[in-house]
Amino acid sequence: MKILDACYLSITNIKKNKIKFLKNILLISFSLSILIISSIATNSINNVINKNIRYNLSHRSIYVRNHELINQENLMMNLENINHISKVITQEEYSVSVDVNSVGKQQTSGSLSLIGSNNSIYPPILAGRKIEANERNVCIIPKKFKLKNTEDFSENIIDGEKLLGKEIEIVYYNYDYSKNYPERVNTIVEKYTVVGIYDQDLNMGEYNECYINFEDVLKIQNEILKNSNYSNTYSSVIAIVDNAENVNNVLNELEKKGYDVHLRSTPNTKLVSTIEVICIVFSVCVMLIAISNIIINTIKSAEERKNELGLLKAFGYNNGTLWKLVITESIITAIISFILSCLLSMILVLILYTIIKNSNSELERITIVIKYNIFIVVFFIAFVILLFINGIVNYNIIKKATILKNIKN
Image (cartoon, rainbow, N blue to C red; front, side, top):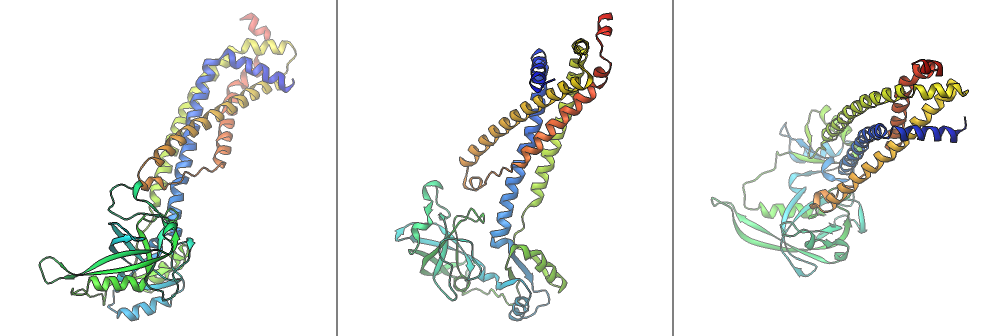
């Protein structure tokens, strides 16, 4: 039998049983689309987590507790001699929050989070340059720059590249800590020149996070705490690892040396695993329901085809030819189910994409990641399931079907 003849007979049979056929493809398409969506969801969340781990300074910053009350200076020197530790700083050098008076000579209000940086520790630069060694009163700002506490998000985003070479005027305060509540006694105003731009979506940072010299951060913190009784002599220090891939090795090394350590920020990888398990379990349950219904429908259809198969045998078609019909029907059903599952998945993805792009700033930064190997897997699953079901159900019917038996009945 020619392939075209097999396709014609298969399509004719499908038309005769179109209601059962539609039920079958809808059931299997729905379960397959869940598999596709679950893959896209887990890949997208993994992408966010990987960007956080690879590019966000917070995920390679390790708190090291000074449990033996060693002099802090000696502790920092000891830690800096450990492989892959790029810099060791006090907590006061890590970050500080300040208010803003103006951006590029334009009066405004809001706050910035200033994070310590130097010529080896900085986010990937999009435009401009990094902070040079010992360079003071300069900063690297986000591509999408926005002060915190401004009311409307979209209307207050500034293109960071337009601020290259311009100044941001910050303000912070001295306090009198002798009162029941600290009171401002002095206002300090400084200007920082924008020398570099980074992509906050790449490291999933905040829109108001700017990087300045570690020494500038420490200077601001010292001014803020100037009149307090605060002492950091024996407090924890922060060890910054040179690369995200080396974080676990450094943690193990520090623990071997007897230090109490923990990461400043750890990714929630359990969330991805949980979502993946839920999606897979749900998809498998739907798939089992679909397979059960398809088997029932296929058995009914096969019983009704006894006369047809017996007649074909009478015309000289052998068992091999009849199997070609069964395989052809399986392939046609698999292809249609696969196409429908892809369409359903893409519609859901487009809806999800629209929701993300019209949501708040955090969700907007999520990139939908589609790995096309999932579509190959899905087609393979559809083909194997349908071929297996049709093969099992039709085995005895093809083997025993004769026109004489059907006439007698």
